[in-house]
Image (cartoon, rainbow, N blue to C red; front, side):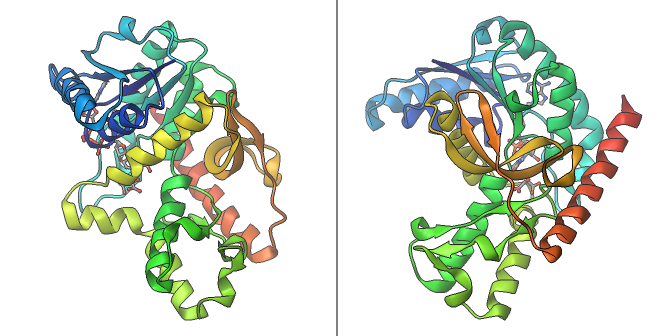
Length: 309
Ligand SMILES: NC(=O)C1=CN([C@@H]2O[C@H](COP(=O)(O)OP(=O)(O)OC[C@H]3O[C@@H](n4cnc5c(N)ncnc54)[C@H](O)[C@@H]3O)[C@@H](O)[C@H]2O)C=CC1
Ligand SMILES: O=C([O-])CC(=O)C(=O)O
């Protein structure tokens, strides 16, 4: 079982490392455009194997897509990260070209691969990969919801002084400030979160979650990688092991939630065919309004992409 990660920067290298040390794949190919970077990081991960006791073979290549042939899943992280003061949408011009060319190369050698997009702006880059690959919607998906819910769960765990393992949550919408956390679907060891925390504290956590990516950009001068890399690896694991995990994933909606032809994060079942099923929640009027705001924002950015191409 072979998995390719394109982009050997912060997120891509972290993802490859998790895929290797957790033995999610038998073989990991790391690709980058910069000479030597993927080779070096892959070698470093491989040299960690005798210490951390795993046998996933990790190989790096510079732009040689023939080595990626037959990949079951491909994670695309190539592209610019944002700097302080930028929005994710500011990355569209550069990253659209990168995601397009990378997807075309990938599909040439692994036509049946499920593609997991990480590059930003996430929802629109997933749309770009869908157009460039011409693959069905279940096999071209984006990672954001696992990361956004992880941030929300981590903040809640800290506030409630409980294990993050026991917080379950759903979050929908685009990967940006219009994301839609759903307190109604948040539980702490099965107990509705609203019974555990005051409304003002929960509202503050929701606000912090919405700007969770920006908080890290401000601190570090570039965006996050440990949680994003792990989140992408968790999606790969669900696919290659056919786990049928229930995760929020960015997928093209085709009528679900009354939305057509737009990429948004929604809960899905993730298994060997990529998205096995989109789960439709019975949203209330407030939640529907938030999702509609998110849809409108993503649609606007999608139209920028249409103008660029
Ligand atoms: N969806 C999400 O939740 C998240 C998305 N991101 C996004 O992921 C992307 C990567 O972030 P980082 O890893 O921090 O950036 P980075 O700058 O550390 O790594 C990006 C890598 O892509 C490579 N690259 C550029 N063009 C390429 C091409 N045509 N082919 C192959 N490799 C190419 C670069 O050489 C670099 O090594 C950014 O767009 C960032 O905004 C980051 C975190 C979370
Ligand atoms: O904030 C960024 O630019 C990177 C990202 O998407 C995140 O960490 O959520």
